[in-house]
Length: 52
Image 1: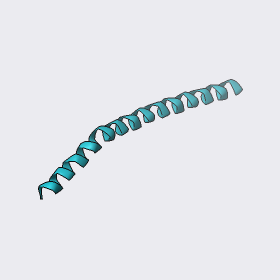
Image 2: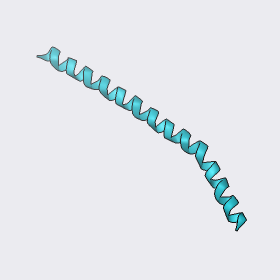
Image 3: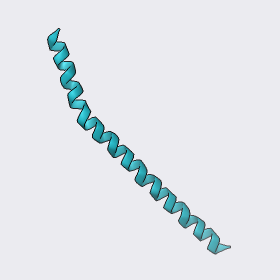
């Protein structure tokens, strides 16, 4: 009984670690997107305001 319980805990830990790694990858992708897009959006809005 204890063997199955420890095996289940190990599986849960693996799934939790895998979820955290995938979630961190998604967050990094979003941050990279914002880092690359945000300055160009700022430049575009400044350019539009100056054009008025």
